[in-house]
Image (cartoon, rainbow, N blue to C red; front, side, top):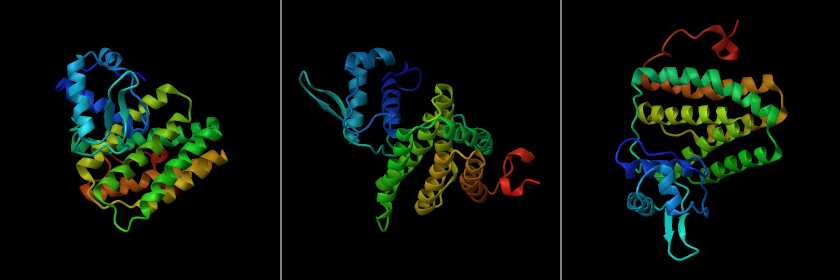
Length: 256
């Protein structure tokens, strides 16, 4: 587990953001112990007091626990990162969100097809576990804010899990960056209630398609998967995609 050097904002805020993002992505799970305070501070290029300030914020949010003693350290105790914990900064403008969605349509179906070629049973099990955890949240008649936050984090982890199954670190980095932009886009423009039942159902079919190894089937189900967010964006924003979509990027059903 390595962290990158802090470069922007108040240093403790970026330290909070880096650790929180690892939890959101499922790279740090409940029960995991972070590297020592000295190692994390060195990796981030910050002082240990600054790291302790960040840890206090995460402890207050219920994400970390700091335990004393030789067997102590910083431990993950919560897998839900409150939306208001990290104030994300981005240069993304409203008119650029269509471009983010276009980039996703270029990249993610091919990522899913690559995953179909290289995924292992462990990958399938991890994706299925994420779906089951989402399904557990559906049992709530009305999901509170914390459950909605967790559901969205699991959605993020599902898509990153597909990227991880490609066994390609460059693909992982690209998808992590793209998913971060999609999160910002969702917060900026999408105010409709969650459609959790549909999300679970389309995740199930996405996993089945990847498991089948049928690349055409993967393409069809990913087309439906991505089109859902695109339609919501157009409805919510009152805009169409930034520019006419080339034939090869159109939904499969619309291709001539």
